[in-house]
Image 1 (cartoon, rainbow, N blue to C red):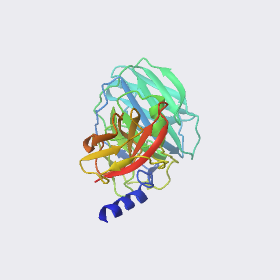
Image 2 (image 1 turned 120 degrees about the vertical axis):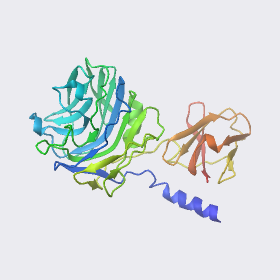
Image 3 (image 1 turned 135 degrees about the vertical axis):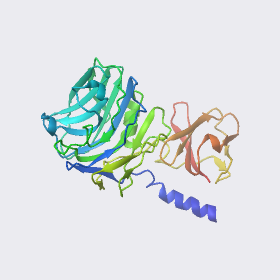
Image 4 (image 1 turned 45 degrees about the vertical axis):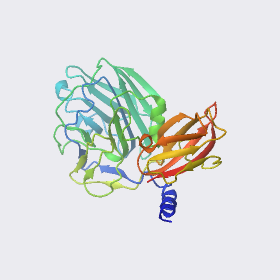
Length: 335
């Protein structure tokens, strides 16, 4: 009865698990998030920044009125002291990058308006810079800078100067779901991240902040690198969040379960009775919609160690046909 009740509770909670409930809010009042001198991706020639943004102000070209989104940028006058920075300046989204000797201030037409959520991605690949807006490639630029400098200043969200200066603007608006990779992501992965949270062990993931704390000043990193930040000069949590719809294959429909899975809940192994499906591929998703296992059915009983799937939680198993369409699906729990 206890296991049945646990499964019942887990099935009810799956609809809210992984939901986006909170963003961070800034009001150009000196509040920002400081992560210290992180260098997990500096010195490389590839990286990707993803984030949701809802600005209230775009700023101007005057230095003190530039609106910083996030950065490790001190000043363009000394490239050795800066790595990169993202700013809003008039009609532009500006991406600054430095290799320690040469810097480049790249301006993209932002193509989004105030007071609306948009998903922004900047991909840097050995000097080729791509700006994605809502998972669609908007602009491409070729820079003379082909790698990122490893500077000694803090990574900040909402601010940029090496030490906070009250005469300089800070961000004004909301930011959510920030992720940083040290690889150049493709459009398919960016489209996935627009709606879904990354896995903490995602290839190349160096930092992921979903801003779900909703209290206090600490901001947790949900990548394996544990690069946590701290609100400075206050804090700002807000229930205004972007509209996301994470529905990977196998999560939205739990029907046509024409095979058996036992024991359920499982502890050490999962046995799948798959008569009639020999030669078909299977996929297993966790409750966040992330693919955790794939394989081939080669007998009427398929046995999988839970170590190859994941920890305690609810999972969905799909059987696929030759065109990778789902022909059957079922759910099981690991405890």
